[in-house]
Every structure is written in structure tokens, then in C-alpha cells.
Amino acid sequence: MGALGGCSLMGFQGTSGKAQILGVETGARLNPTFPTRAYTNTDEDTANIYLTDLSAEALTALLENPGDPSVSGQLMHVHMFVRPKPGRTPIQQTAITATVRHLIIANGQVGLYSGAGFMFPSGTPGDKIFGGSITRADIRLERATPGFIDRLGPAEMTISFAAKKDPQLSDELHRRIELLSLAAAPVEDAASADAAP
Image (cartoon, rainbow, N blue to C red):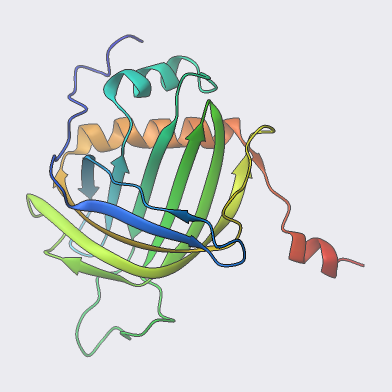
């Protein structure tokens, strides 16, 4: 497929799309910015936000060849499954209202980090522009291709973003995340392995 269903991969452009990721044990840091951002929603309490620093050409290459060695970049999916409501939703560091999938591509090799945290929304799902932030969400490597090197280890992620409502672009980015996730194998949890009889 040379084109992306006729949709634009520009998304919502601007400075509001960045993350800070710190390896808890390794001390490694990653500070991605995401110039392309889109979201979709099903109701006023849930939203799926997609962010990437990959160009339209790179995203097309990944659709045609998920392991393209010329591609490096990142894709992120934030799923807010409950919108915090004052007096009804616990607002504390241990509460969880969103899950995060952060996919890192390094020369065609893929690592998928997953986790969850408390999301402070800006606006309401369904708005033309919807944003939010998550502070210190715990993430860890969940899937990886054989050549992917995990430099982060267990990590904490802080992210802030604003995204334009764009169901078509959201679907396109979702397809790529799913495709690349399937190209990577599950990573065995070392702690679980140690605890096994």
C-alpha cells in the first residue's frame, strides 16, 4: 500500500506532545516529542490517543515491511478508560485511569513497553482538541523482536499532549501499532521466572 487510505498523516501539529522516560534501575533517559497526534472516542469517558514522531513515509514503510531496517522512531497509544470526576474518582498517584503502550523502533527492531497511570484530562472526549497528562506511569518491556536492546528496563513515564479528533488517522496509527506488536514476541518477566518453582 503506497498511500494511507487517502488520509493525512500530519495530525495535530504543535509543541504539545512530549514525554520523559526514566529507567528506574538503569538511569537511562528518553525524551521523545510527538509532532503527529490524533485521537478518537466512543463516549465522554473514554478516549484513544495516538502519538508518533515517524514521518508519513516511515509509517508507510512499516505497513509494507514491519522490520524495515531504515526506520527508527516511536509510536504511542494512550487509552483513557475513565474520565476522573471530582468527588467520585480517587485522585492519587496509585489510582489508574489510563493505560499506555509505547512502541520504540530502532533500525527496524521493535520494543513495546506497556503500563498504566493516572491521567489528568484537559477537555472532554468528543472535543475538537483533547489533551491531558500522566505523571510517573510505571512501564516495562512487554514484547520485543530478537535484535531489540532494552536500555530502559523498568521505567517511569511522564507525558503531556494535545491531540486533534481524527478517527481516520487514529485508525491508521492503531493498525501500525498492532502490526508491529504482533511482529514482536512476548518478553518473559524475570521476576516471575525467578519466582517459578
